Length: 588
Ligand SMILES: O=C([O-])CC(=O)C(=O)O
Ligand SMILES: [Mg+2]
Image (cartoon, rainbow, N blue to C red):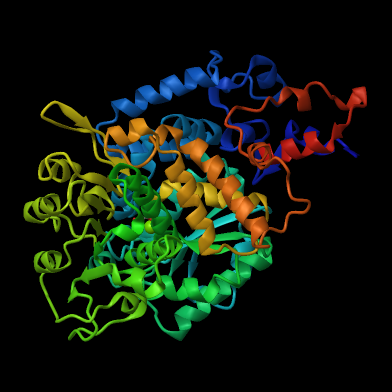
């Protein structure tokens, strides 16, 4: 089918908006179409932007170089964050390309740890809107509010209510930085098209007094709404998203507090195409690293004994996945659960402890006297694998680490809390106090550590290995729901990509530079699981799934406007094909 070129011609015509004459300049002002100085001379002429740009014409590669120069010249990471946010607002293709090609230097800026600081300073650095703010006062009108979002084909939503932003606690509406950062990785690492991504901040107030007093706060100045009214709003949002953009719209829950995270996951997991990244993404990535560690220790998962410091939803998510893995190794559920111990702010998780217990951790409560000290708990359990998910920096003390090294030839130590300032120990501490024998991973990045001439390159056990690929896979095959098995499969896929070289350098994850390739493989694994369990709706099932996934991914290179605007002038009677038309629509 061919379409008339009238829409295409409209681009180069004059428009009168509020008395202002605007034409080609809108193409420069629109981050989706803007190429900056990379517009070629013929494009500048046809689009009516000749003279609005400096005369030099740059290639995208030259622009990358220039941007990199500015990036490295910034005095602080927060300045680098602001620089990249500005680029994202100006020139989308350049932004995503530079992040995707420089994951090691840019992921720590657009994502953890710097994104944490950006959230804390969000009132100061806020420039242009990105995403939707849905507040408790919008109850009853959420669909109308979503209708204000200009994109018709949203496929991935990341939503937070800001109550547990990384390990930084309740940041209220400042938490918006997190859905924005996660979705930047959906595109940069997973190739999901930017216009298909929507960050949502669900503002139900904040209990953070400092923010309520902060002149720069941008959210509702009220205490958090909880209980049935909160639940109704979340319900309405989930429903409205799928009403507006279709039943298979992917909805990622991010950084909800423990009291809500697992509860909302249980409530919605079967009804929507959704997952909770802090529970399932974290669990998947932790499992991936632990699977890789087995190749070094020569053990099976069932041969291990685990102690978690922190028993929130992330810890429980990991523990549940470990149980599934140990059952696959041949243990009964009871045996598997017996190998997993937890400790939290109220002490060892035991059956009758004074503080009582809520949620999933009850599954792991042991029949043991109450103990209130982590170091004592460690001595009782003598774990071979120690996992920190408690957002308390330094709880893995020298004594803790030395004990781990005393009991284990290759102690496995994961300090997963984010950002770096909340990590349970640093990479240097982990290697130093275990004579370099630790198999260490952290949620946020650490630089390589040199001990006695040996360089250790710690891996980053971060969800970013998992969620962009799962998201991409779920979107392209139109998944109705996402089961835990998707994450188990994703974990195995990630673990399989860890090479002997990685392991020899103490790294339990593939290098970040291969994360885009991993995302493709995880997307393929996700799609496969979708067809195996019947949740994929795309029909027919693509035969070559990898080629199919790649064909759906965002192209970071600039489109040329010329085939559309130059080669097919109306007088020549040319018409655009459907494909050309939709390429153009994607561009504008
Ligand atoms: O964002 C990250 O780096 C991982 C994550 O989801 C969290 O810590 O909440
Ligand atoms: Mg999170």
